[in-house]
Image (cartoon, rainbow over all chains, first blue to last red; front, side):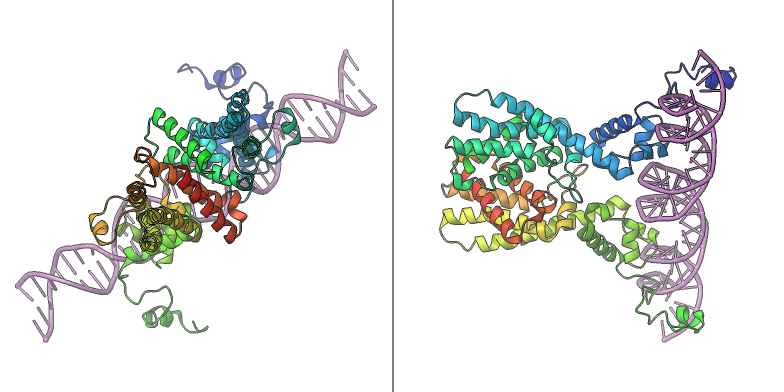
Length: 227
Length: 227
DNA sequence: TGTACATCAGTGAACGCGCGTTCACTGATGTAC
DNA sequence: TGTACATCAGTGAACGCGCGTTCACTGATGTAC
């Protein structure tokens, strides 16, 4: 903005070609998406409490109340962000899962599947701490990623279901007594979830990446042997 | 307060004998303690975010700024609450610990000690959810209960040290290979911490007390066998 | 034992902040004629 | 192809809320004489 130049030119004449927040058109185009993206970015940067409706509208370059055209309120925006975070976690786990499926020998493959879920979980918690935290704001809503038929058909299962499938494979391969199977998800999940938190902001926060990887490995071995 | 009675009498003449929030004396007596107690009560009821300085002063029947005579600010009050919560957790664990020490056979006793730490931890998380949450707000401050010589001499060790001592006993009794000892605290802690959270506001929230106890038992067995 | 005085714990009023949310509006877009 | 109009996405201004914190003060208490 050149000093001395009448404001008129800047705000009016140039407004359409500015790279600034000023949109070229009155309408936004895809504000719902922009708000969700902003919300996800906020969660990524600062965890669940950073998901602030007004800040999301600010980032979208829009008035605060514009959000109410696309979300019933703050809670609805947050829910959408949380669903996105859960999906991202699921994808991280599925990437590891795909590798495990390549293992030939059934028992080894079953163990690899269990480890894959744990590795994906721990990796996501560390790589996307804010999203991970946002994903696990329980309380009023359900934890479970709701069974989404389209998604299940297209790609696979949600994280909890993947863990269950891995444990089933373990039983089928004879690596886990069938009578220990029921409820085993919760034992495995506990161990991995707890370590994720200790690494995120607990005493393992300061550990090096190598130390963390080694500890994760040991934890997963402990779960395998202990189940 | 009798209707029709001049306000004068109530606020002035009767103020000293009122059971109401109005103190009998201008000074409070032990406001620091009252604020801390209120803060702890708030944490107990609503977790860390419920520890609000103004509400603590309200409960102590005092002006908001009066808190600044005893705490540098909100953070200082919260830190005091958190320290209290950590102490309460330690006591819960020590109660279980004391029972375990009665076991005669060394290996069985060592296992009982490990289980005691886990049981105390899980029990506290469920009985005092708000305090448990407040205790585990990491972030800027250290996790560890600072080594308090007076306390260590008087009663014992902090939770983390108790866990370490139990694992040492396990090694001494030949129930755990010495080369698996280093870092084992983090594996055990992960499992128990994770389950505590799943029970607090995760998928195990809805489980009955009996189910929870059974799952806790299984988890601790898993840790014992898996280490 | 009584009086003057310093201390400092609590008061009362006000601040700025950012939040979520509501109101009446405006003007770009798509549709019907 | 042009014009009238309904729709509804975004605007601008304001709300009440509770928070942490600061200011200049007041008056009960303990101490020195």
